[in-house]
Image (cartoon, rainbow, N blue to C red; front, side, top):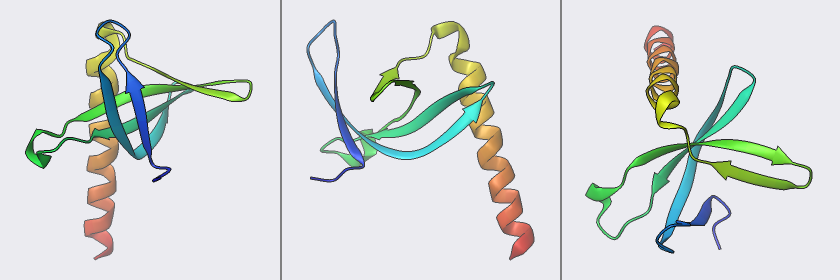
Length: 91
């Protein structure tokens, strides 16, 4: 089994969703994971950002509040833009 893949269950629908972790970052003393949904059709894959919460020995993933989604996604976009600009300046 690939340790970069996790399965989440939607508590409302019971639907299982497989996610592959592709990145993580810190923002305002919180840690977030960037995940790619695993689908049969790669064109339908989506990027999902979840908060990673360490609770003793357990690691929990929590969905973002709607009120903070734009802020967190925009922050991650800016990190990607900075990394891309840095790569271009090195090359």
